[in-house]
Length: 119
Image (cartoon, rainbow, N blue to C red; front, side):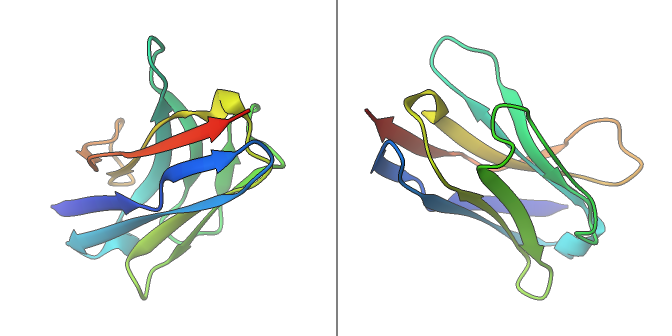
């Protein structure tokens, strides 16, 4: 199993930047594909970005393409989400999640970190 802890959330003005971190412990994080999800009040949880276990494949939601970058440092067992040009609609609780490559779903989740973007 793997345990995930997010950090880096906070309050930022529109147009600003934040970098979220997802630190993994337990089983080696490079075993897992990792994703960032977010959930805003009253809305369903949505996938924001995904990264393969080697880091050579990434995918983004259309709403964040060109503004967010997902990356990972397997030596540090950490996955990052660099968020630039933030908008008020990016306000949400952000979660990182991990899954084994053959799994159809993300089985391991962090506790979430709040991101609030003021206009």
